[in-house]
Image (cartoon, rainbow, N blue to C red; front, side, top):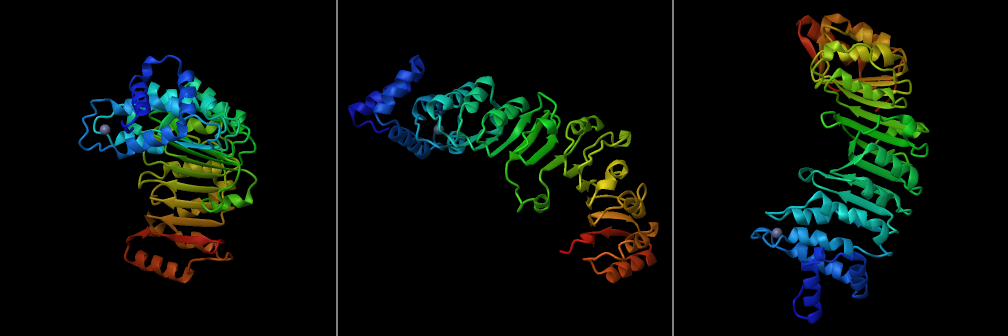
Length: 391
Ligand SMILES: [Zn+2]
């Protein structure tokens, strides 16, 4: 803030000592009368222009900036609020420190300060371990006009996310990438009008999920979803077989991306959970045992329409014929970075697609298989695709 006027001096003095003022509502009224939106703009501009390179952080300006926000972010006219720039500004400082409670103070005041928000992005920083607790969730739930909510690099409980989806009736989309599983995830718990659900389960160490729920289908990103009234995508990368218990409640998965390359006890995998609605699957094997693939197909192969295999060694445990036998309704099979012994019957297996509309030149494929068989080499299959879907 410029120090040229008496008013600015007074404001600076207030800001410097903001924690001393117990009555934050009075401050809001003072700042609103003094055109708080201009003050906010000026404050943010000063923070933005601040050269952090030569900054020792001694005057604790990051902390002070965040302390002023609960009184400055204050207007019934605000429809959007995004903390991304605030985080970036703070992070640029050599010596910055932002406590969770300072951050939470800002989120807590949104319900009363900016009750008409439609878009809210709460962006944190991974290294700060920020979180939304009960009071912050209660504040968000009171934003009755909220349509789009992003929570990124800030942890929030699954029960909290579900409460927001139930109580913010106008919500069109919510996405959170650090959702703590305080309750077991269940397809039944997602509101029906959120027709598209995407779950990322690759952080079992911290018991966290990424979760996106929205009322419209993202057809560009997931073209298959256009044909379904509801569509659930699950990307799962378990570290232990026990992690697959996550699937118990997720009964409505349509598309699965299952990566088994981190699975330490892969050979202990008994029965793979049944996913009755699943039609599309990507199995990523990381060139490890194909045991998980066989277990998966034994239970879920029947319903599959499209299967993509990546990094799978089919040679020892699973033959291509077995893949087709377990997936009689398959329209499309794609291999990437997968290999198997050529002598284990790929031609016979592929010829089963004879009457289908192949999008790969079958003659070339068979010629290649013969050539490699002749040389007794193992084939590396890259990007081969057979099926009814033309590209
Ligand atoms: Zn600085």
